[in-house]
Image 1 (cartoon, helix red, strand yellow):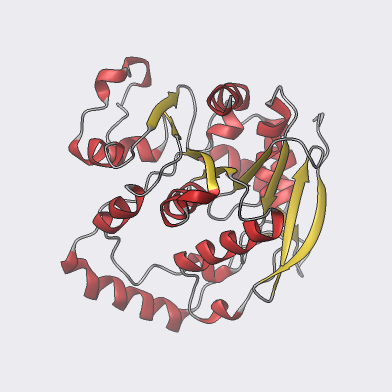
Image 2 (tube, rainbow, N blue to C red):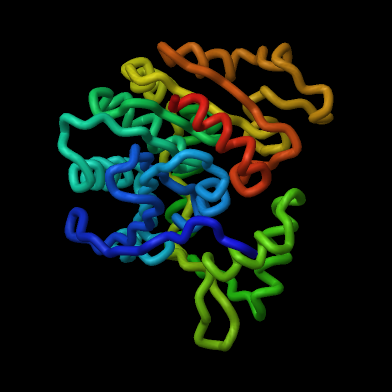
Amino acid sequence: MEIKRLSRLRAISLLNRRVQVREWGEIGAPKIVMLHGWMDTSATFQFLVDALQKEWHVVAPDLRGFGRTEFGRESATGYWFHDYLADLDALLDFLSPASESINLLGHSLGGNIVCVYAGIRPERIRRLISLDGFGVPRGKPEQAPVKAAKWLDALRAGEVLRPYPTLAAVMQRLMKNDRFLTPERAHWLAEQWTEPSHDGGFILRADPSHKLPFPTVYRLEESIAIWKQITAPTLWVGAAESHVAQWLGYGRDNPEEMGRESIHTPEFLERLEAFAALKFEYITEASHMLHHDRPADVAALIESFLA
């Protein structure tokens, strides 16, 4: 597969942790900081960067415990959402002075991180973009004891990452999860996301502790209170065939029937209305990994919004 824009890697120290940062474009060009999703790496943005028509300086870290960024003491009990906010705060301080506002983009977990961060540090953000990362399903207080018990049980059992015998097996898994992913892109991603295992197979570049269940209940009201503090214009981009579209209610079983009138569920409207200046778009014929499936369409939305 042809790569149009080559990335360069550098390791930096943030909060006493070695963090792998991937960059595309020339320093001095307009900057976009991109955060990847769960069980992913910074390489995931390659197709999107290749589809951008203008010159940008794109900076994408491997989040803690993913890719080539150092695993930490969290391995014992799991990773906590607010640690990602601290990492992003330190990264932006490293990249630019506090007086510079940043274009910030995130996918999935990364989208949730950037939206919360933008409400906590609104002065740091010029434009905000979330790709299929609009919070998670609302939790209920009565779930608290069950979730905490599952977490304790998982700690006792331990988590492991299942190795794959070949890169082809990794490709098959990726394409099973995303029916729009081409074999060429699946092969490239398989090489980026894995490393050789001790038994001759391949294993994901990720800390197994990321698979631990969360011991806490998601409180949507807290997220909404933070989102309401965002001052930057915000773009949400959803995908017609994403699992997020199903639970959040902006999708339908038949993607061809989707239209703006399908955005009507109270759960979704409550989130939309929390943002002072929000534009929502969705991509058809795309899964949760919309930036893999339709990178040119996603890139066009991004560049139009940033302009």
